[in-house]
Length: 166
Image 1 (cartoon, helix red, strand yellow):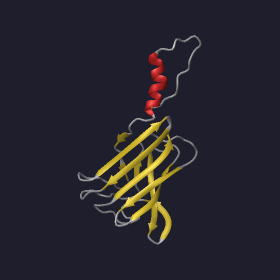
Image 2 (spheres, one colour):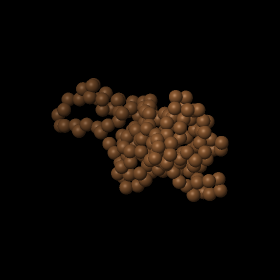
Image 3 (cartoon, one colour):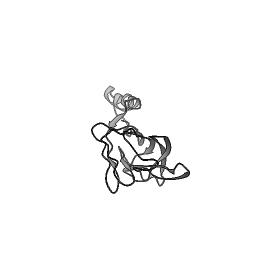
Image 4 (tube, helix red, strand yellow):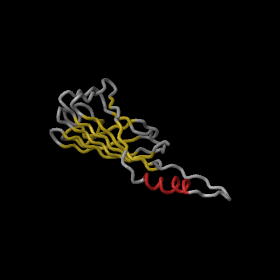
């Protein structure tokens, strides 16, 4: 994982170990495998539960303070959808950059729905927004019935890039 480079001092003897850490390791981290994590999936009234035969996965790549993240929900027969607007835990808290970052979201259910992900300043979670109905382009938080009633074959896919707090 990339980190702030060291401050060199006059007369310092540069060793192979220092060069490897400061140059090779930093460079290699930009091509490293993504890090897997399990995002917590919440709703304000009742939390959804993925169930034993569904999957909830996340992965991210952190380059300096830039975070590239994907979250995938694949429902199964035992998934319960909870009640209220959905949020997912970020792998790293967002910076207070003074702006909200918009990413991509898809729901694959009976139909395919395109939406947006919004990462707010200082956020620790991310929410997804979708059209409120098939006849309206207004958007609102995703939930068990928006944009359509979720079922055992529903998938939710999120992709976004944001600045981390650290």
